[in-house]
Image (cartoon, rainbow, N blue to C red; front, side, top):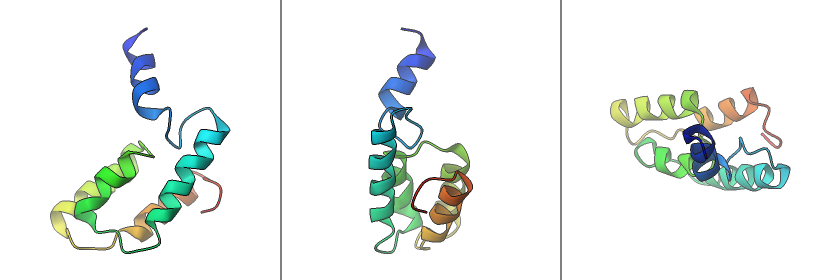
Length: 89
């Protein structure tokens, strides 16, 4: 298996970017659950990375984790999921 395919299988298969619609819905559900309570920037990267490997989103989260680690980054997550047209956001 080539390195790109291996990375996709190991890291993105369960994410928003999976080609499997069931896995996409599952990942979206996990991300929605993160929105129920404040999501501190310093904790958000690891929590979001499990379900959405989006470089723009994760870069924004990393920025806030260093500049304002206690900031609630739920609005950042919501906005990016809407930009990606993820169902339910």
